[in-house]
Image 1 (cartoon, helix red, strand yellow):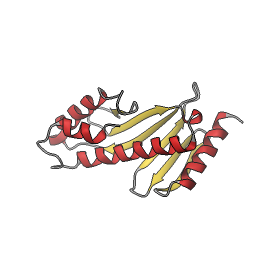
Image 2: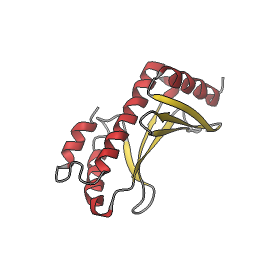
Image 3: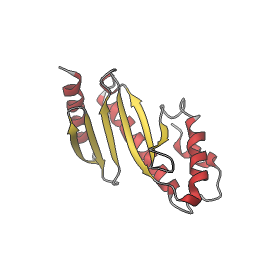
Image 4: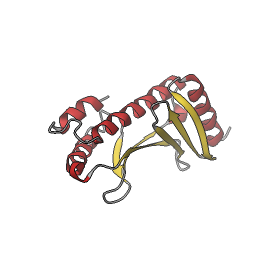
Length: 151
């Protein structure tokens, strides 16, 4: 079985077995979107040059008054890559949308492990979305966010 077919079958099984996922949409042969009941969409992209897949979750655009706080937290969070499963934050462009990214060996994982990792990724994205809301955790240090997002 080729990698694309194997990935599609794994994602169908994941979506059917995880009650917080409301739909799985194929964008093309190598890209899918898992839609969670929370409203979060996680894109799963087959990285054709490796056995890994990439997860991408859109967080949102920080308000101008919150950018420094959010960017500092995202950079500090980047230092935690050993603790957070390699989850990274990025911007789509200058002053653009904040996105959460991760690469994982989805085809080498058990379905249970894959489900746990995808759910954890989605949970972290929701924490970040809450952090972007004006006034949420305002005045608190990025360390507070780090504690919430570890593991």
